[in-house]
Image (cartoon, rainbow, N blue to C red; front, side):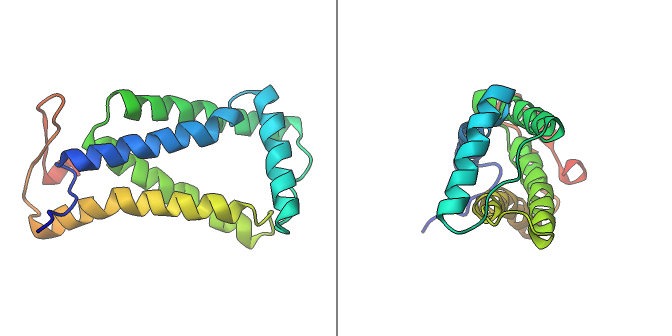
Length: 159
């Protein structure tokens, strides 16, 4: 019998770390104006070749926001790779719900459908990281979850 994935199990930390590696690989190119120009061109060409639409021409504001997002996500990814904690998976799952919401909003307002590729993966990572928290809350809402690296407890009130 397989045991369910819960935030307190080591398998959950592997999921947290894997999602961080995905983020690092996908967003590293957004972190500088020079790499963003390359990523923008590649995504636009991919969208065009798949019939999903091209990206609008980059401008300084778009580049700035791409660089800010890329920089923050890289730092967040490195933290989850170097020191993954169950609460990092919870917070990352919440962030992915937010990211997915804004991607769906953008898609509803006519952006290139290439964004569907990102939305699909973003949603999947969010589900994989949040469902164990829901399952843990439903099976034993008063249970404490030990954060393995530092021994502090994350009880029902801290969730």
